[in-house]
Structure formats: structure tokens, C-alpha cells
Image (tube, each protein chain N blue to C red):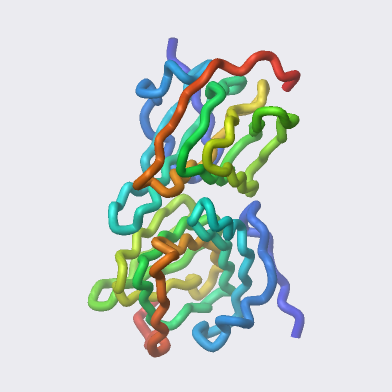
Length: 133
Length: 133
């Protein structure tokens, strides 16, 4: 079934994120924005359909999220989920287990920055249970 | 004289950028967004009043600009100035002399990422002459 994707930011949508689909609860889209090796700051735009979340996961190098469209949530293990909207920045420390994704009734886009890419590895864990958001 | 600053993005404006004023042709504002040492990707939002440009300069670590509001220009030495708008990304290689700033008739905001911050040093050069934009 064709998905009607609203324009929620001026950043590119990219292609459907099939490479990571096994770690997401719904459809997402991925647009790489820079992968320049000299600059060493890989950035992509990730767009989630309403209600789509990624699994609990962690990054050995850490991650920074820059919200550019819609409304979503960010949660670290053992803490309450935090609503995040356009203009918000999320600093995710190395090895902290967390998830992010769209609010149930909103499309959501954030830029994702892989920190310390030379040493970064991702660990993917279980899907998010109902957390009341 | 009080400056009336329009809201052109959802990112914070911060304080007037007096620390770098000597290298800018007009008023600018600076909002640090993350300076976490473990993540190692310092990001600020920089807002330029219409017509404000920074001097020619370079970074030994390189820089990435993410345009989040308004219209501006980016130029590398020896190349034509390039118009940049919300949603555009600019990759600035290490040691490349360049300037950026607002279009003459538009406020302008970009996120600025300092690349390779452990080794980065900035070199500030002369103001930009009339480049026809």
C-alpha cells in the first residue's frame, strides 16, 4: 500500500529505511546528508511514520539527535520518556540504552549524528513495550 | 538601537555574538546547543542579521553548516558564492578559506558543527569585498 508522506521539514526524506527495518516497529525513511571522512561527522535525516519507534539500542560512540520536524519521544532505560519537538537537541552518551520514535499521532523527523565514528558500534536490543506514550 | 529579531527557526537564538563581532560585518547571535566532551561534536546555532557576513576564514578541522532558517550565502575562495536555504548542508573541508552570511534582504540561521575539535584551530582573515550578492 502506498504511504502518503507529508512534508514536515525542508530536509530530504531519502529512501525507505529497509536496511534497519528489522529494528523499527513501523516504516521509516533515511537520507544520508554527509559522510565526508575528513570531516568525520556522519549525519542522516531519519523520518518515522506515526507510532514508529526503533528498538532499545546503544552506540559505543554516542549519538546526537536534532529534531527538524513533527513530534516524537526519546527515552533512556530507567527514565521516563521525554517528548521532543522541532528545535530540540538530544545528547545520548556512549553505551546508554535508549529508543526514539514518532508520537502516535505525528510524523517525526530528526537528524542523527554518529559521534566518534572511528570507534562507534551499535548494539540493537528488544522492541519497546508499551510505555504509555 | 534595539534590533527586532524575527523568529526564523525553532532553534534557540542565544546571545548577541560579541565574542566574534570583530570578524563579522554586522550583528549576529550565538546559541551553543551541545559541547559534550564525550560526544565530541560541538554544535551552535548562529543567526545573522540581513547582510551580515563573517570574514574570510578557515578551520584546520573543517566545519559543517546545516541551514535552519532564512536565506544566505556560502563562498569558497576562487569559486562563485552559492545561495543556501533551509534544509541545505554545507561541507567545508579542512583549511579551505571561505565565508558565510545572510542574504542582503533576509535574516539567516545555520547550525555550525566544529569538526575534529581536538585538533581544530580557526584562522580569521580579511573582510569580504563586494561579491555581487
